[in-house]
Image (cartoon, rainbow, N blue to C red; front, top):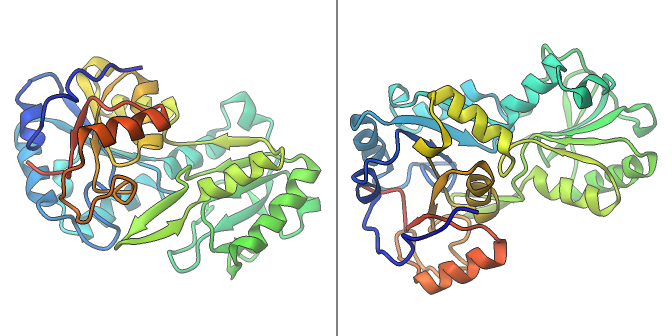
Length: 306
């Protein structure tokens, strides 16, 4: 566990942390930190520019089902200068690499036939280059691959919309067969333009409740942090993670042995009793919530601001 000696010190913005000179690499979550899925948060673009100007290596580290290149393109479309980023790593990218390389014993033993849970309105995930056969019948499947919570992939490459309870019925059949599940986005929910959306991590938790085996890929697991630090070429002692989810971002930083910044105005805003995006949460409320999640930030900010 990372100690939190700074939680008693009020921080006005990122500059207070940058000025310590302790960190060469900043591992930034995107949803809830840089943007809300539709638009940048106030001041986020200028804060990113100021951070980049200091010479910091900035890596996006995201529980997104999509490939890393797609993430940078999305940020560019929202107005963030892609030249400010050293790179990006997503849970979707790690999932793709693991299924493609199969250099890990667990993945090497995996079959090629999968039930594919994906997106429809948010855009289906391509499995191109993975040599997988998508099947609709659980009895034919070697594993379940969860990229999304809106649809079921078809052998043709198309998708058919399916409500959450329909996907859960498929999980019940899959768990009864004893096939494993890979979750390419461990988030339980995400906030997009102030609307909560159910994410694949919710399906994965359900699968574990049913007795199924889940391969979790992404935050809070150590591999994604190691990949991000490798992109930046830094050690844990030189790195700091910034995120809005205690369970994923802050817990992940604790597991990876790096310091962290908790942004209170994101997914935990309602729990912390915040009425507006940039309202400051009390440190007592933050400490109580951190203890509940067993995830302890080094610093706390209301928003990604300079």
